[in-house]
Length: 568
Picture 1 (tube, one colour):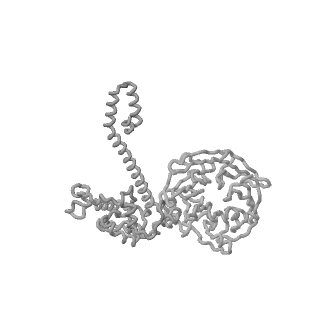
Picture 2: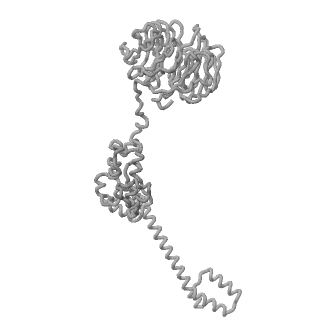
Picture 3: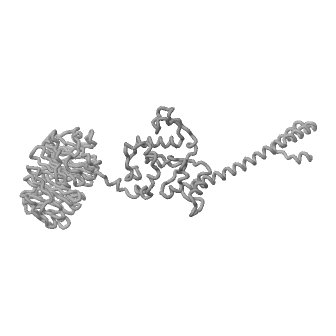
């Protein structure tokens, strides 16, 4: 009993012993089992001891790994687990944080540089203090095995281009890596926007390989810490285009598939206009059909066409909010097509008016008012919501043209007396009236999108461009008088940024001119010399300026891409 009590057996072995004792109760066999257990005793203790030692080793290893991870996180992201110690040398930090074990990864700072961060790797540690003084950043991790490795670049044909001398054969691993990086950077110089010090860089195809490798890549990229962060300080380079200024002389454009190629008209086109989303274009003409096309410059798919049985279309226009289309002709009434509900409403005649034609109208930029040209100098103001007459304005002469300004609060008009009127729609009063220089009969008006400029055309083909503020201030002299047309000016249109002014006359072939507004000169390569525009009747620019559509008397809508503008 004393022997058994002194040698305590594991629980499993005790259960096995009990089973054996119940099956074979012989004393002799019991003595043999006890003797066997005496022999197994040293092995059991060895196994236990080994297990305990392994547990201790695992705990120590886990603690060391946790410390190393904390040190690495402190090194990469700041002092997360230990307080910041001011005055501690960088060499001590490197020894404590990095040199005790190999790093898990490294950050490659040489992507935008000609040289390798591994250049002169053997001298890296010796020049640590000098790098701090010059403001250079050190690589996070350097592979020590690269210096121990030797590579024979003369044996492999594709590596012979890395040699500096003909008899050079074996080089170190760090030199091999730096030469590969330098060769790659020479073949792929990169993009200017990705260079951190693009002002100081000067790439040259005549540079020797040795010159490329001997410069410090990290120093060139990080000489000025503030320069590294400049790209994050402003979005101006993303918003303001370097080519925002349109140059005079030649206009870069290309002819695309006709906008109405899928369904051309048999009659003259009197209206073309882009929707505010720049993908939808409406066309209308004397064939009484209002057509809609999806403009992509390739197919220009037809979406829908509407036939107005009793109204040859003289003008059709989207409301600026894009919800409706106003269609008019030489009739007492006009039509309103609702794009959302897809129904057409016939409106008119207007209460209290006896006009036989409502073919000329303009829609205010805020989509609240529609101004129609009436009889005997009257201007009819109609609400775009209720389609009811809400007021009238009276000029001294006949009214020929209208244009809105100041976000729809002001209205400009001109006509048979050669004057330009400015109306305040809030008070329904004329607050300014002045003579258009050299004009006897005004035929066309248009204002720039900002309202700072307006152009006035006459039946003699003269177009005067005015600064609106100066004109209202008493200056009657136009900024520029354009004399490139010789017949009556029927249509004028500024593009979206007021750098192009289109002027046309329906009385002469190819009589469409594009004026460069900043210099007030016409583009010499427009109209195209080898193509005919026929008799131009209407024109519109897409909201982004990329497309220009022109309708002519032949029933075609010519579509052009203006390359200066990136968006439609």
